[in-house]
Length: 528
Image (cartoon, rainbow, N blue to C red; front, top):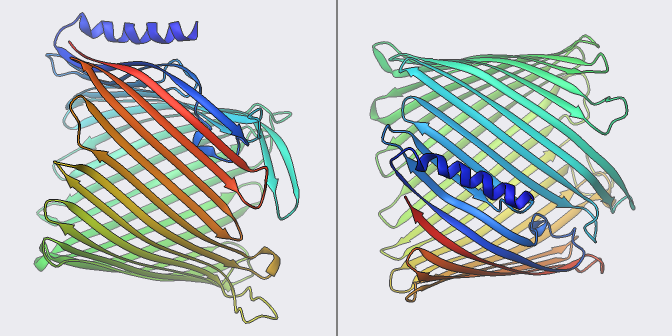
């Protein structure tokens, strides 16, 4: 019955414009998905949202009326539980409208009996009666229910939890335009309904009003000013818990001679806990200067200041950023970035006080004339808590250290096809006050995609990814996908896809997974 309803609704949707005029196109697909899964279904989330069964889809739907109204749509797997539906309509300068629906499942048990499913439905629209004014609004529903199973290996225990909630959000607003800029006002309301908590203890609501603007300064177009105001209230329905937040932000962007640009941004926010009568104030300021050298490159330098204060504690911090890019010629392109930020306690005591963060990144790209490019990239991130020292060791602080190095090769030639090869290494290390909770990993990921040129009526695509993680974890994953497209007749084609997935946790015998998936479908291109 559900399958018949899905097909009927889609046919009705497309029948309406056919009666009115103009022209369009779409791809109608019908096929079947075969699943063969073994062992623990919960360890490989990449296949959690796949279902076996008949699949009906309408994709790349486009229709244009003579009066300028355009329709677009993608309705994937309408007959299966992992359906993904999207539709939009618009007329340039007059209105826009879009709607979507998506369903997702996540598995938590080896046999697949414990899982959660999330459904998200969105609708938004805008109408512009004149070039000076626009109205807009939207509505969003998120529904989630099911049973989760959490396992915490350091503590050697696990537990299950039943989840069920619905969240509704709507927003309405208006934008006014003038020759210098625009101003927008919007209200937003969110209602969270917990269907599992006894007495609905987790039900809560939030109301928000936001006003923001952007303008050029009259007679000085090189100067741009922007800013805004936001007021928000969050309440727990069955308690006296209530938070009130006020937020101001603003900034200036100025362009000068010789391709210099200056940018200033600020945020000032205040949140009040009404029940406890505690207010927390936050402020944030950034300054940046950028210099561009035509097509050759550029450099940007920035500085930030921030602070947080309440009745008991006060913290402050600052940071520095520099990034640059340089194009040597039509083949070589270089990019680099460095940032450092720190914060400390000025008054009072908090759990994590003296914090330092640093990031480094460099990339080099070489473009092969007519054939593609190769990109090498390296980055490093360090987060350090200087006031949490590992007593009795040489470690002066608790810190997390992350390093990544990657190489990506893209080759494309009309006579042969396309090749994409990626090789990446990831190193991570976390050291804490206790040696028992330190963590270290070393990951290696290789990915390859090959798309040969078409052979007559046949098109082939093959890709695979190998993942290996070592040190405190010992995991191996592999996935392989191959697709064959056969153009059988005019506007009719046949597609077959084979996918294989393996997962093996070498430290836990039960955490293994193997899947073989075959998807076949006929695709009809329609023009009307």
